[in-house]
Image 1: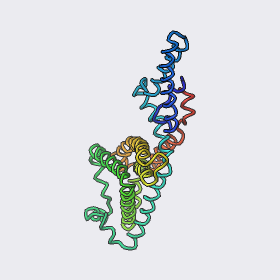
Image 2: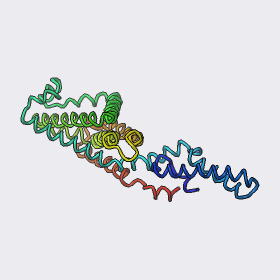
Image 3: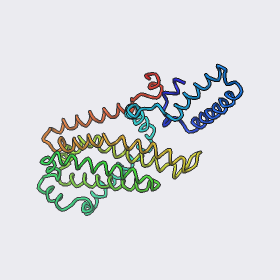
Image 4: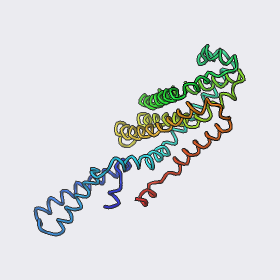
Length: 302
């Protein structure tokens, strides 16, 4: 009973929860019969105590919100990201595949740049300047606007998973093509190094956050396309719960990335230091996700 009291119903498989719920109802029926036939027996009092404890476990009456949030960030979110590694990897491959495709197509047909490179951007590039230089002069406001935009994009790419994943995949393709075309345009203008120095620091978190959000959308699309043993609606409800938790966990990543993009990326900090910062934050998040405590470790620590 002490071990059961530490569990969270959100992490109990549905079949185990159903068996436990059935046993709980049987225990209640046994207690009612025992009260009627042996009301003063010590076993009845013990059974009543155990049923009361089971009620707290089943309905999570003693759970505190602070504990839930602590467990969410330390254990739940990294575990959910690891569990969704397949969809996240698929989203990453779609993004980079279309980025390479966009670069090749724009290299063969420069007119394609017109779909993503505005005249003002092209004018600045022709004089050897990136369009990102203006960010340095309005860093606080830019950081806030960048964070808002990135969170909006991530939520959109996640929410479109409800369209059987079609909308999520389309946004991945669009953003991948855009990145490829922009890289090609900067290569043609001799500004690729400047672009790389600007993107590398914040991109180390911003891009993975978008891939994770897209993976969360594909997690939601999975049971819609391939319903499991419990049927499409039940599977979708369970998948939607997981995907919401996954996408919520990307918000801190995007806030950190926006702060870096607003203050560090457009600064005069040497590119080597920006790359070192990118490696540091990427490694920190990788260690956090892949080395976070597993269920057995959590149970031992509680």
